[in-house]
Amino acid sequence: MKETLFLVNFGILSSGLVVLLFGIISTIFIKIINNAYRSFFLSFFIILSISTGAELINIISDNVVVSQITLFISSLFSSIVILPLTLLMLQCAGKPWKRNLFFYTIIGILIVYFVLLIVTQFTRFIYYYTPDNVYHRGPWYPLLLFPPTLFIIVDLFALYKYRSVLTHRQRLSFIAYFVIPLVCMTIQMFFYGILLIAFGTAGAVLFMFVNTLLEQSETSIRQAEENARQQASINVLQMRPHFICNTMMSIYYLIQQDAKKAQQVTLDFTTYLRNNFTAIAKPDTIPFEEELEHTRAFLAIEMVRHENQLLVDFDTPHTEFCLPPLTLQPIVENAVVHGISPDLETLRISIKTKKNINGTEIMIKDNGKGFESINDDTPHTALNNIKERLKHQCNGMLSIASSPDGTTVKIFIPQNE
Image 1 (cartoon, helix red, strand yellow):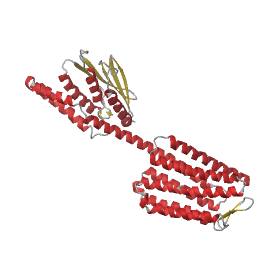
Image 2 (cartoon, one colour; image 1 turned 90 degrees about the vertical axis):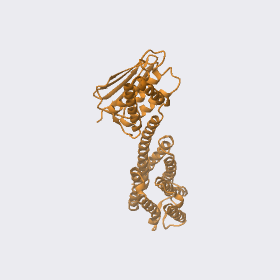
Image 3 (cartoon, rainbow, N blue to C red; image 1 turned 180 degrees about the vertical axis):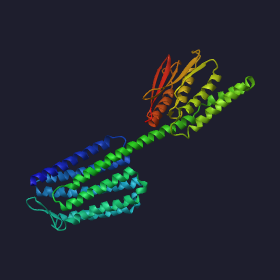
Image 4 (cartoon, rainbow, N blue to C red; image 1 turned 135 degrees about the horizontal axis):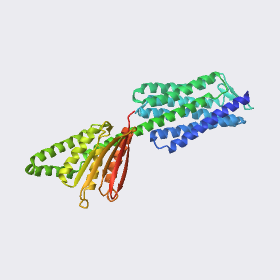
């Protein structure tokens, strides 16, 4: 029976130590964890590794002095871990620890617990070792479990008080870490021998770590989407000044030469500006027809400005789908800006949509000089921005094939489930 108990405890502690060492390595190398969580989990895993390692040495050792020292270290460090845990909760709740009653209460209980452990080394009231290295609980042993229980109760009160400012995953992580060890501690008081607290702590911290990684991953995705939306807004606000000036000058001269055409260009320019600015207020996807209207308005203006130098072919029978705002228009604008040149007689742009069983494909093709011959990175920057927004907002994809003979941009938007 004694040998079986040793093997069970050895297995529990060894598994827990492996989990904690894995946690240290993961915390160091996983990049999505922010600095606050990284500092917490690193200190958390290191403190618990010391505690678990000491407890493992304790059950292996046959020397009474080594057993006493390792049990003292294990008990002390398993309680010290409550400090970074409390600090993390306060930081997540946005509460400064320097003026927080919960934090100083934890410090006070920790001091009392440390004194108890010191007293224990010189008495037989709580626990003791016989000269033949046999561990015994004293009549006041439950007193040693009282401070760790108070740690959990105090932090549970803090968790309840700050619940409204914590995320669902944060609340779930803290509750798991408090409740699981508390249950194991209660069971261990009545079932002597099996080190359930070590098992419960390892399980709770593993759950907390995985839950934190999931939350950090979701936060990272939301941040990427927000960055993409902000970049789209910046792109709108950074409309080319010379495009606006040239359009206004074209309207000015057309008023005398062709009043009807001047009216049409004014209408197209108004449509273009309206769609540009309303795109800022639309963080979600929009119907393709709206984006197509925006693109047509832009091209209509450019065809007046570059008469006989620009031809456009629309083949868009399929329009019943959505995409992020400012997806098609900037691609076409890149084609015009970098495609029209004295070396090219006429820039031809074709815009096609096609539906298949998996989703929708949009193809924008031109016969311009291609991106390779362009010195600046503007086309690639704009297209990369569109690519990111497609990915995060509708799981879409964008591919580019560019050469001196022209450029083809393909967009694929999967079918909504």
